[in-house]
Amino acid sequence: MFCRNCGTVLPENAGFCANCGSPVSKDTPAVHTGTPDMQQTAPAAGGLVGFSNRIHEPEIIAAAKAKRKSSAGCMWILVLVPLVGFLAAGLLIEEYPLNEAIIIGVALALLMLIINLIVLARSKKPMWEGAVIDKYNRKKRKYYRSGDGSSETYKDYTEYTTVIRTDSGSKKTIVERDSERDMYSYLAIGDHVRFHPAFGTYEKYDKSRDRHIYCNVCRAKNPITNERCVKCNNLLFK
Ligand SMILES: [Zn+2]
Ligand SMILES: [Zn+2]
Image (cartoon, helix red, strand yellow):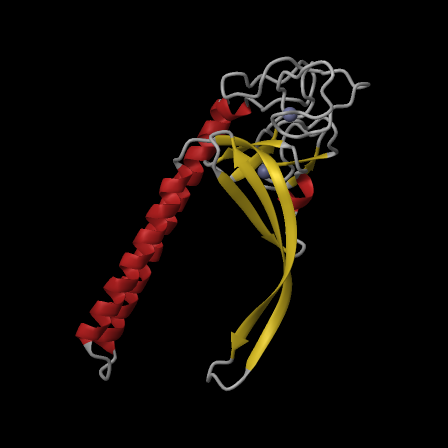
């Protein structure tokens, strides 16, 4: 017998999966055999159980490359804008001392460079898998001070957190806000997920009970029956 959620082999009388904690229903036979590890990506024939192997499709690899290229392009713009801007201000505005402009411009450019290098490094990390172990939401309040600091306003919002324990044992969280809680709504506790760092998106192992699927390239919501994303036309990961 196999866990319907994550594919772990279970003893015949098991009530819960030892790996992901999903309840085991006896009346629904396992539709797949094998564990959801990196090597075994092929979904069951005609089924929606299993991680998609579309990540290896040439057009998806090309989409990942294009995304990395465009974020590298944005990086140089964000680095150059403060540098050129402050230099121009120092040269053109008489009351603005040039050396001060250069220091601020260079400091901001370096800061942007560091931030962008971190983002870029993250997108190159290997993909990981794990199981959703917890979900919770919290009411929060963010305070804003007015420009002159004399008054304060606030905005209430709800923060939705989805906690994933990766197969290597570390903990990851997806933090979303208010109505933008796609993954919080999409993923249930016990769901096995794969993170695609090239796109910063999550894929569910068992999509067989879903009516929707999120595009792993652009995050758009699609009917599960679609082959391609309605928004970006890339192949959906199923
Ligand atoms: Zn399981
Ligand atoms: Zn898309």
